[in-house]
Figure 1 (cartoon, one colour):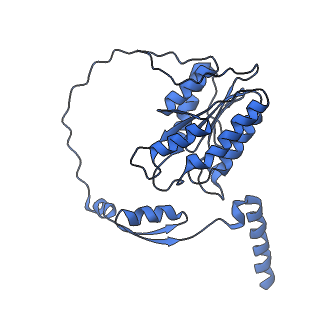
Figure 2 (spheres, rainbow, N blue to C red):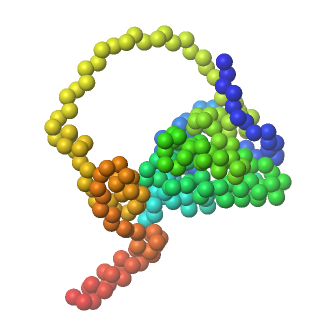
Length: 266
């Protein structure tokens, strides 16, 4: 039985053909890139500098790559880079769909859906003002037990105009269907595997000690320390932020000035 996809009822303008995907990590980005590459027959190789797929206008980025996180927080915490990329993609008349993820859990943004919602609204509204429809398709990675509230995140994204899918694979299928390239489902006859008896390896005492550590020093994002304290551990919080607000050019300039200052003193 074919999967029923939540494909929105939109009519793309002539020239809208590209999928732009901005993920906060590599796992979903690689899944999306593989599905798009195989379905469209792009024969693209994995890109560099965070671009898992970058060919013929199709773009799948891992914004958690080092190239995007030097001197700035991870995209699961700070959406600044992603929001700018979404806005830029929305201005491109060839963009047909924008894919995003929302990762829940400890150590991530307290309300990523709320952070992205204004940009989603802007992207959709700007495209409409230019005579285009531009669907934003989202995936939420998390459960009802996560501190951000899965249902609340879903509601916020949907109220902003995004289509929220049950999985990343489904989101990519929706994106491909929107540009007229639905994924062909292959049904395989698989025999059920027989149960096997597995003996769990003994855990060394040294590893047991590591698993029972409950005192930590947390550097940077305070939400990690709060999660440790909430779950019975003890964390000493050390607030740290990159110098020059994360601007790499300014950091280099300050390093040079510090070097010159030290040489002068000597």
